[in-house]
Length: 169
Image (cartoon, rainbow, N blue to C red):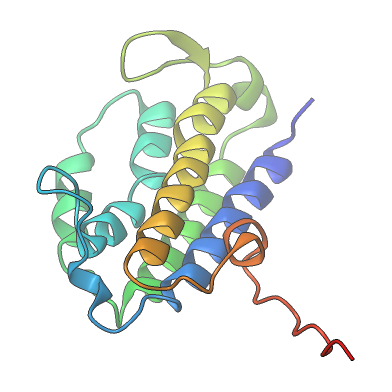
């Protein structure tokens, strides 16, 4: 059975990787947009700062009253304060999940945005952790497509730069 700490650790892991990927954005990359209908790099970064905490609060409270205000606050995110915004989301997620009793985490009924019933713990995993994983991958692909052809698996899945390989003799 997944514990609250497992879930917190997984969400914080994803946030750490996302913050690492943000350090790889090439010059001029903030305006990258794969197509006119898709988010720009900056818009994706802003969304990343709320994509987990907004649905987490909904899973606990049962409403979306906070979403508009949090979305407006995300409009202030830029390349310089992105790391701080992501760290803040991590702190809020940790505090929120730690504030849920183990009984409520496993048993209290919540609902997915499309109305499907779930427990609070399942809702946080399905709406928050999975969002961080999915949007981390999208962010990686944006950074790579914006010009960072040198990034790969280590940056995307572990959030580290690979060790240089010794020269072949």
